[in-house]
Each structure stands twice: as structure tokens, then as C-alpha cells.
Image (cartoon, rainbow, N blue to C red; front, top):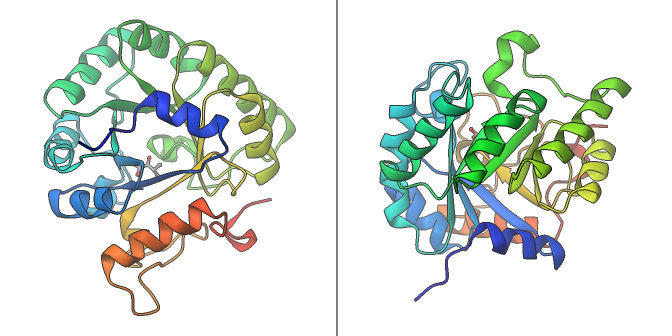
Length: 265
Ligand code: KIV
């Protein structure tokens, strides 16, 4: 029987300098292929609001939407740890968060949940992790707050913001978080956070200094309407989909993805 990746596996991968490979999936067919290609963490992300539902942000996504997609993904995964996003407004206090996290795990069958935010989420993360819910935090560009941020922009370029993000990452770790996604963060800041934490960082637009990388599947196979600077089309060069996923996993593991051109400074 294939051994499942767990949050402990992720931590030991960090200790052993082994890169963590992560990719989103929202349906059974892709989930099976992605799992077969050895991707470590499959994210049922609220990016599904954009790539599956056609919205211009993740804001409209509901807990029921995530459950619907997670239920299709998880049974296909023999090895990958399946992470599911708590969507916008589903974790405004610790009780609401744990109720919705339980739904993602019991109805959606997810193994770990992800939520966006730093300081404001510490009580929530503490509450969930004390009750046995594995949690991945998400710092930097937090797409659920796009309307507050005023657009999809790199975060942490100013000294005060960078200092706050480093403090948030450490506080989230102390609150029990098992991993942190860093999205659209300058490389030197992502590097400091990665060095300061014992838990792994998984970057998207945060440089190869992170302990792992995550991409949205549709970006990675070049079918998104607007491909962000930090992504790459691995389906080029005449590859088929399984080979594209294999090439992405290999590039993350050997450090050839992301390149300097795919990073922010
Ligand atoms: O929803 C998602 O796909 C994500 C990734 C961008 C990390 O949160």
C-alpha cells in the first residue's frame, strides 16, 4: 500500500532539504493523474471560483463548493495529502472556522485545511489545531481580500509589511500551523521566513528559496486566460498532461522552477 504524505512528512522533507511539490485539482480525473505523478500536496483551492466557475475572484466561493470538489478529488489520491481551502467569510471566528473545517474534513474528506491571514487568525488557528485539525496558513497576497488590497499585488515590499509578515509567520507556527503558503512575496523576505520557521513554506510567486512550490493547475498547463508572471506552461514542448505534471514536479525538486524571471524582488 502507498504511504500517504502527512503533515509530519512535510516537516521532515523540510529538515531533509527535499522540496515539496503541490498543485491544485478540482476533479477526479486530474486528481488521479496528479497523484500518480507523485505530487505531494493536492490543493482543492478556492481558485476554483476563477478557473472552474469563471468568476474574477475567489470571493464568491462557498464551503459547499469546496466540499463538492474535494469529494471528487480525495478518493482518487493514494499518496498525496489533500488540502482544502476555507473560503471567504467561512472563518470569521474560531467557532465558525472549526465548524466549517470539520465539514471540509468530514464531508469533503480533506486531510488539512488552509486559511488566509496572519495576526487576525491566531486564535482560530490555535482553536482548530488544539482540536486536531491540521492547518496551513496563507500569507502575502491573500486573494480573498483582493478588494481590500486593491488588486493582485506583491506584498511585503515595505519594511513594516515585511516585518509584520515575519512576525505573523512565527506566531502562526506557535499557534500550531503545520505549513504556510507564501504568495507573491519578494524572494529575500520569503527566504527569511523560510529560514526562521520550522514548519515548511510553500511558495507561489515567492522564489525557489521556499520549502516547496504550489501552482494552479490551469496556469501550469497554460490554459488560464491571464497567466501570472510566476507560473510556467509545462504542457509546452509537445508533452501530454501526465508528462507536464511530471516535468513540473521534477523542476520543483531540482530547483529549476521557479526561475529568477518568475520571482519578485
Ligand atoms: O486557491 C488556490 O489555488 C490557492 C493557491 C493560489 C495557493 O490558494
